[in-house]
Image 1 (cartoon, rainbow, N blue to C red):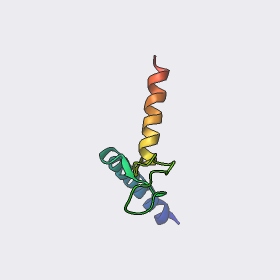
Image 2 (cartoon, rainbow, N blue to C red; image 1 turned 90 degrees about the horizontal axis):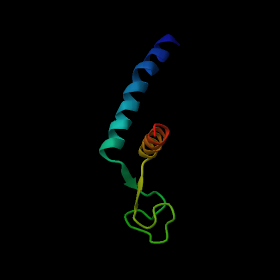
Image 3 (cartoon, rainbow, N blue to C red; image 1 turned 120 degrees about the vertical axis):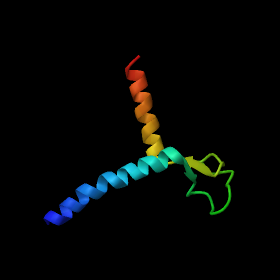
Length: 72
């Protein structure tokens, strides 16, 4: 049990930092609701653009706005 916990403690920060870097480098991903390989003009998730922000980017924007509005 000890080596498993040590492995999780070492891997979790690496995976988290990797995802943060990925979201900063590429904040927009393809829409999963639209048909594969194309844009669906009636898609409500992406408004027909075929691209939507990643979850990590949405959380970053939320935290940034919360900080900005709280320090005014």
